[in-house]
Structure formats: structure tokens, C-alpha cells
Length: 155
Image (cartoon, helix red, strand yellow):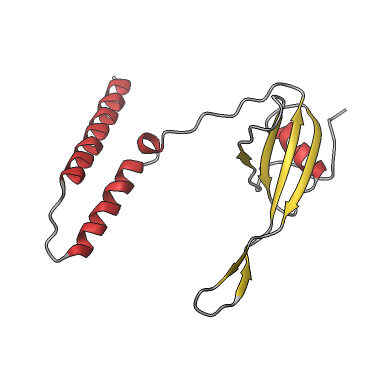
């Protein structure tokens, strides 16, 4: 018989669970930021069916949004609420390593574009700084390495 916990059938997940690193949790616990409409059974279903882990306990809390006041109008506003789930897993949990944003997700190109735009705002004549030239050289070097790796894989 199939393993069933809640009433949610998970085929292709259309919800996002964001891992929240928390040093206060045990080695077999993990904290997630989850959508407000997801309940404990849905969280258990999602983690057990998608990631094949044995979930023993799920605790959820809903945090109120932070209140802010506009400096110009004095009008009070509140940010959206956040739901946090602390999940206890039978196996020991290890947080995934952080991705290298500069290498894998175009972080260097983003920094270069920000510097270029800031430089453009200074005046009509754009003169790249030494930092910009070094960053540009690093970007080009990374692209050459990626092209060389791709061509060596084809051969």
C-alpha cells in the first residue's frame, strides 16, 4: 500500500520551501520558510515524497509582518506574514553548501554592470576605472575557461 499522510497529491511541486539556517536546531532538524497555505501534513508529504526523507515531526509558526512607517506621509504599513516550519527528520540533516554566485550565476557580470551604470551617471564621458578593467579581465578569463572546457568535452 502506498504511503499517505495528508490529502495533498504531489506530482510536480508548485510550492517553494526555502531553507533557513539555524544553529540552535539539532542535527536531525531543519528550518524552512513555507507558504502560508501549507499545513503540517502537506509539509510532511512534500518532504517525504520529493526528497525521500523520513519526517518524524513538523512544527509550524506564523510570524506577523513587520510594521513600517512612511517617512513622507506617516502612513503605517505592514509587510506580509511569514510561516516557518521546523522539521525533525529521522536521518541526520546537513545544510547544502552555498553556491558560488560569482562563478555560476553571473555575479561578476552583475558587478561590472553596476559599476558601469554608476560610472555613466557621473558624466557624459565614461572612463572605466582600474577596478572595472580588472573585473572585465576576470569575466573574460572565466568565459575562456568555460569555452575551453566545453570544447574539450566535445572532443
